[in-house]
Image 1: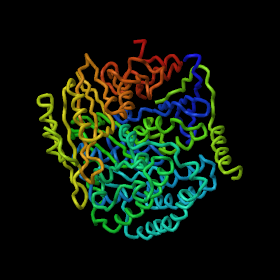
Image 2: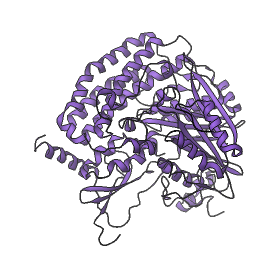
Image 3: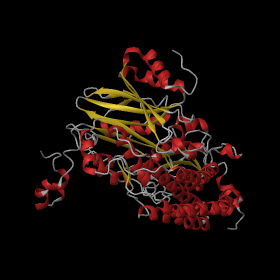
Image 4: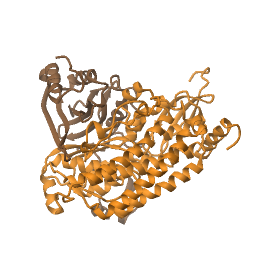
Length: 413
Length: 197
């Protein structure tokens, strides 16, 4: 660094500024302005893929499920899809529909949760409490269907483990109506509120070109107008039977700017889409068994004899996620397993989004890709910071962010 | 052969690659998996390409559409390491997206592959990961620091390798823990099977 260089470094993390998850970003600042952002993941890497390569596929399902606490459905869904692909096993159609309903319920839960986190980052804690309160309703429904609030233990190779029976439909419909009735209020709070607009408009911009070049995924890139959605592009589960369209801001009369505001918009509109998709599924659900091979010993034997490789690819609430599985004949354990969560691909999009923004905007931009570090990291690492560095902890940053909102509102909050 | 209009069909993609890459392409496989009541297919293409033509294959792919790289997976298969670049083309067209998985074999005595970050900037995360987990060298990578593993993780151990550079000697099983359990010193636990043998 030359004498004339006026920039200084600020490491943020391993306690994350936006979420209470271990992740570090090294910022280079010129005054208040960010000139470079260098993410350091890996604080949470526990070698799950390595563990999976020493277990049989059925034992990996609970392991895969625990990769993420919010989108636990995503990883079990992808893993089972990849194993089914590799071994040539077909799940029943009813199982496909049940999988779709579960995935969409989880999307509602994840997006509502995110909206609360985002509001908290810019100092609107009433919104946080409101969104997290209404999120309980879908959590209750998930518990009603599966018996668990998180880690649903619903998936198995060839189908699902629990049925969604006719007597459960009223309760599902009840939950969907509840969200519909509240949606106008939700949209009003997040998109109509002038002070939230001030903090989210033209902040953390990701252009369409950058989004495509950096292989970004999910609502993060759809907000920039990129039409990428695995549910539509390469339908899995029952999505091929359903009516759905890409959610991009221009569809609703907004510009595809790719800022935090459009990311919020995309996520909220996806809640409406999910409600619609669940209704379609409930209407069309075929009457069949829920599992194509209920005898697990037979299934395990079949998997042992299987030889091949498979891909599981789906649209998680945060974007495309990917599993690759290779099975070898005569080997009970997986021969290879690669897990790729959505945040992994969105990591590269951080640098252009942070560029030129201010310290006080770090929390909301960090939160805007809806990062899930648990998913992305999978070994035990200690932070290595070198040289003279200024340290901001989460509390300081949060205070800065809240103060910025206050300043913008002329001192009142 | 020139590329056709988007979305390209599986046959078009096949002839596009076969005409341009000729002999350096092998094991071409097309898959259609029909799903759901409407039997809408999920389309996949797999092929292996020689290492020297690998960058050309990616270049061809980027002429179709800005390539979407999902991830690179890698496995240790005896005398070589197999990398699979999982791309996707035709995104933005309902039901037409094709997963194009390009396999490259790297012999164990020369574990190098050229970078593709100049064509696909988003590949940086996965290229850094492959370097630390498989012990390969990505030539021309703009940032070769470790990504997930810590600095104090041994430099010559790679978690996804099955040979002597793998993790087998570093992991411990309960049934051969007796010795360590009887003398539970820090040194015993740390160096077991690693340096002392």
